Image (cartoon, rainbow, N blue to C red; front, side, top):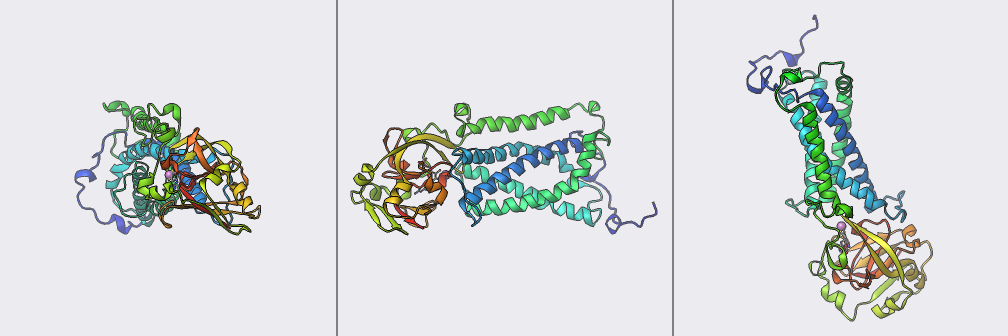
Length: 398
Ligand SMILES: Nc1nc2c(c(=O)[nH]1)N[C@H]1C(S)=C(S)[C@@H](COP(=O)(O)O)O[C@H]1N2
Ligand SMILES: [Mo]
């Protein structure tokens, strides 16, 4: 070719070690295998990103976004899918990284400016993916070996990773299409092109291990939200059947430091803010109000969820009693020190209009266990667990 050599190609030191031609003979290091794993990861990461972004919007709603109270199962499903697709991505990502790691020693290492950019984008892509999966698993298993705040770090890494993923898909879509169409020799340079000449694991077998591993991890964890799997989900951080009154507990009353205040005879439910008649109700007065029963779910952001039969006072009845406008929204505050994680939550107007959004006094036929929020806890359809505020002290109508 008459083309002038690129400055990147000029240096030609001897190719040794992993730079050698044929240093990675396994036919598993193939573009086709990488493409199949890559497409699968593209799907799991996209679904994981969208469900994660939804959860972020629900917890930090911008002015244009109001999360509805119905359907009541939606958050349980979307957050279950978020955690499940993240977990399924782990074996797929490891298999993909193993498939392509010989390219780390591509020769020449840097071919062109575009090649440099494509390779640099791998840093946020691989680093971001590993960070997201590692912190995600750490978070759902309540194992925090870091001292940064998980949600903002996980959220920022998600945007970086999805941006790098878009660059990566753009750079690779052509090669993947070619490899999957079978019109190109399916091997990275140096690999044994004919799979049959290679005695090891076949490509089909390798992909079987990766997808089988993903499926096994899903089955081993999804029981934290799908009860039929609870008995076989040996790796699930939570068993949705285990806990006081048959439901798991995330934060106990003693770890929240609210036992004395919750048990105190001087506890009052305060309703203030944009109301005509501020209320201060004793527990007996709340019990004397008309009660409602509803089957509602605790759906933790960690991906576990559990349903129960709740009985309590609809929030809308309570704030109507205080003379709040029908379009009211509210902040529900607990006995915890303000500023403590999950010490309070917002209830939007649509959620308040739903009669199942209630301040519950009973769970599964008995007064609330103190770890489930005695004397009174907020519970409503389609709300993330972090917004089902326990040990309620006051409702501030806005
Ligand atoms: N006041 C208060 N309410 C809280 C929490 C908390 O830490 N403090 N944790 C929340 C979280 S993260 C979840 S998942 C649910 C769990 O409710 P449970 O412990 O009754 O199952 O409570 C929520 N309510
Ligand atoms: Mo939670």
